[in-house]
Amino acid sequence: MQVKQIANLFRLMEYFAEVGRPLSVREIVEAMGWPRSSVFNIVATMVDEGYLYQPAARGGYYPTTRWMDLARVVADSQPLPPSLHELLEDLAHATGETACLAAAEGSSVVFLDVVESSADIRFIANIGQRLPIHVASAGKAILAQYSPEELRAILGRIDYQHYEEQSFMSAEEVQADLQAQAAQGWYLNLGMFAPGVAGIAVPFAYGGRRYSIALGGPVTRIEGRADVLGKLLRERVRDFLNSTAA
Image (cartoon, rainbow, N blue to C red; front, side):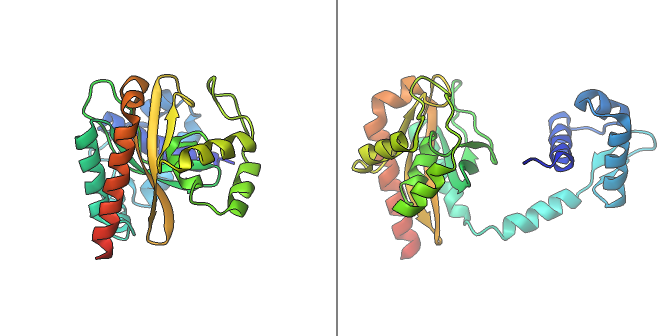
């Protein structure tokens, strides 16, 4: 269940990042569609806590560097090394597709890091973006690492919906798909969640956690070279794990 006040805070910070300038209370009200009293309370609280300030008198509000300081501390404490981001950069460069590191959160898969393709037509992904775990290739590569008991439990909690023509509508269909793709070592999604968008992913067990590394792009580019991309992903992940274990 979403906590509205927290969601509004994140939406406001994303809007500051989008416009890149100070905003008045009136501008925030107009952009967000929130009651003026709610905006005033949010802004006043953030000012009191040191997260917003007025660069000029009556010139609107803007985030302070306290956000950056917090983000830096969190990033420095991140259990994932910079070499993982470099791996994604290498994959994006080698394949021409968007490369993502993903982890499971309940019945969703969330992108922890993303390096977008430089192609004009590409899979656009954002850090923090969530997709259904049983449909996305990144999610299937994580489910493949679950024990039978864990898999039954998570598949039993999923609200199966009709996204596209080939969407899975039961736990049995998901399990059959996982078994069919297990031998090749990578997991494919061809337009199952969004039309024209494909993904291919491999399991990535690292630091005691179960992740996946995925490539995303148009079906027209992924489908015809799925074997090549799958083997490349599998080999690059194996090489990375071997190098970090050495």
